[in-house]
Image (cartoon, rainbow, N blue to C red; front, top):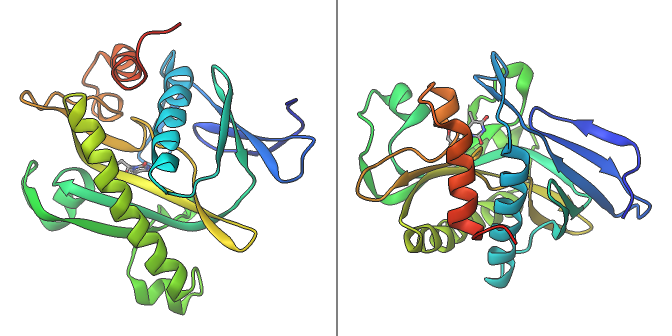
Length: 237
Ligand code: TMP
């Protein structure tokens, strides 16, 4: 599958046209940003690690009945995916307190919630992705009621599948962000699932194994992406 023209360039990925109008290539860059682009850097090997990790996790979710945009990994840093229209809502699922939740509500990091929290944010860089409730999403016609309840239900199912998987590799799934897209008459899980979009803490030590190493200048950034690639996907062939 040949890359055509770039349709969209985001902070960490580029979407390319293909000769099939229903498919696009999702290319993963080494570029990293935080705090809505205020902090910028490069994490050598991140594109390769996130392509391998995302591909493996999308395959796992598909096997467990979650409809996704994923078709196949086509190179070290490219995935072939269905061309969706992204719903401008970012769904965050939280199992353990950290990040913006601690800041917003003044709670300490590491509280284990009895049941997961699902939050919705308006995907809008110019507005800094503000938190929204269901009424905002419906009133502003960002998604329909059945789409919203479907996305939330799927997000919780994904949480159950990923929690079990990460547990099996010695990692606690702390929180993660999902994006969905419209494709024909369906909603598919889209975008990526990687250490850029999840918080992953090593069981026992709570060592951070995700992009917080970059956001918080914790060091060992590149080696952590490679460690997660290895833990999730296994040794390179
Ligand atoms: P937060 O605690 O900063 O709101 O982040 C919640 C989760 O969402 C965390 O797993 C990191 C992920 N995330 C993204 O994928 N993209 C973003 O732009 C932000 C702010 C968070």
